[in-house]
Length: 379
Length: 257
Image 1 (cartoon, rainbow over the protein chains, first blue to last red):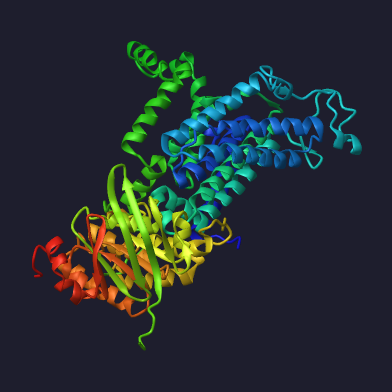
Image 2: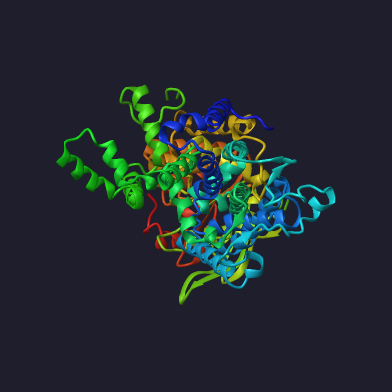
């Protein structure tokens, strides 16, 4: 029941190893600090969930940031009202995001293609504006929802936990404070769990039905599948993944702001998935890591760093290269990312994962193209 | 007098379909006997495909009803009609181009169990050995077993048609609707398909077939209805149809080959 095929099991073990050893292999890239690695894990969860909708059913949602935001707000409210323990916070975030996705999905999925995308975008922008204006009592508007010492935390009160501390309370996991690497390993373990769930969905008859919907919805209908609940289920599941990601954002940094629901966030997860490889297991994760790396590391490179990096070049050449390259780093990281995105979409429509698969196939088959993944009997 | 009363499994009664001012179908009364192969022939634009679309729930009739084994089909969603045991082969093959040939055949097999909706996350497609074996045996029958791991989109047009037929057969439908199942096939493939359809015929499945190729029609049909300008102008045994002067005038161009 909970087992995986051999191939998937190998993937899962490799994936778990890669995620858990992040602090080691990321250090040469200057990214091995918990704050960033947490983001890597969280946004990978977001993208994995998004891929269950977009990658399997082909429905392109432009509003998934709404669920990220809902997850964040729910988590902070759970901290404020109930307890600083993260387990109930995560459970509530996933449930509330799921309900939210059910409502938005129910309406949006009445249309397909570009109209579906526009509807999800509209719903997400609506949520964003509401969070900024009308819903200020819940969302605390522009300032964002913050923890306060005076929060009731009724459950914690009963158990008398964390009531006498100076300063703001910290999120805990069954009484243990999470800080630094604790937060990272929490996100990492959840990412591995989400990857496993995504593997199960990909391999199941449910996943096959979703792929059938992407490939030919007409045929699915005339084959006896009621495609509506299937697409809605995929939408809700991916919304719940986003809710969990939002919860983790607020757990690792206990605040929630409306900007998490902004359309740029929704656009980011689309970019991540396409960059890595739509409909593949690893693609969204790779894409999420790449984009977060660019956003945090590439954007921090400045002219001085370029100068010292290129100091081996003659003066004139050095200043020429520094001038050119400085347009692509620091503030200009969007430019690099944009170019990369264009190149990948044009030359590798299947994303980075497809590129890697092609390379592997070329090494193995000695130039033999196409998929020879399993032996084929002669006709 | 002692003849057994034929069991009518599909009955399209008094079906009309207008597209704007165009009368695509008028006064259609089609009765299909259980276990028989019923061919619908007629010139281009006679309304054959429209009739099939009305039966399958793709387009609603302007008036009239379609009854399948005591259940009214009119107004039901396509997936519900399929769940009652009606499968259809389309004129342009509707297959899952992005999936492998084997997955194409396995997906419909899950429809009866999961179609109305079931999140079946704990099982894996690979562990459904029974379904896979059945799919592979059908692919063998149909001559596509060697290509089971290929993308269905890479098949030739004729192979796509055969694949679509396999997708219908795995559902073991009680009624199979075939919209020109051999169009675009080579002579050899056409004959293979005829043989295959004959084999199913002995299995007791009812079939409604639209076909241009008279060779196919007269090899398979137990009964033939002729459609011209949206009306059924004749209905009967193949021999009667061959000899019917109205049919020869309307469709066969005055004489049968």
